[in-house]
Length: 289
Image (cartoon, helix red, strand yellow):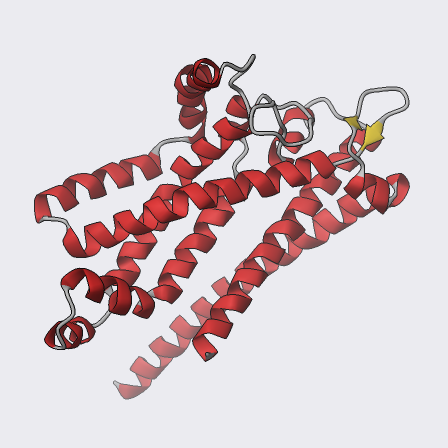
């Protein structure tokens, strides 16, 4: 009986090891493919011209392949979505996990889950029909399809990831921590923000990382509300993100233009890796401190 149990556990460990190796292998294959497909165009165009050029005219004669507007737009759009979405998602998570009555919590949690299941194209469609005209009328600009519209849509789209993961992290905090704080005379709100939140900061940070990944990688909804024009970023001007640059031209691209699009995908991949590595570094540093 004991030998059978050991064999079963060994088999399960083997299955988990194989699945883990498959995951790592997929990441390595994607990385190698993007490097092999993206490096030739960067070498031909020139790294400085490609990364810091401010003009993208891939079909002109002669063509121009500067992606600085796409990089800056992605940075500003992601930062704006985080600035808007993280505080709202974090405070909503604290309210649902610690303060909300059961009825309200059930209703809001269901709405958040529904928000997570809505396809990105629906977000883009609603943004086109409601948000874009609203920005145009409110700010009296020629076209509401702009960086501001993309930021608002992205902020809404990252809310479910931030809220759900933060709630899980807050609920995992031992109740003894809160009981001890309340026994020392702290109010419930003080306890939640000064005891529960610091204890759950690693999970909340993970929620922010997921939100950043969702914001950077979104293409369809952003394409529908941002105007998809290769301009330098401005709140009330049509812009193009790294993701939308690849999605909008890949269907008809050929030659150097197609290779340049793979180079954009490589830059986006490295950009996401850099952000995740930076966030993980600061998270590990705060744990050690």
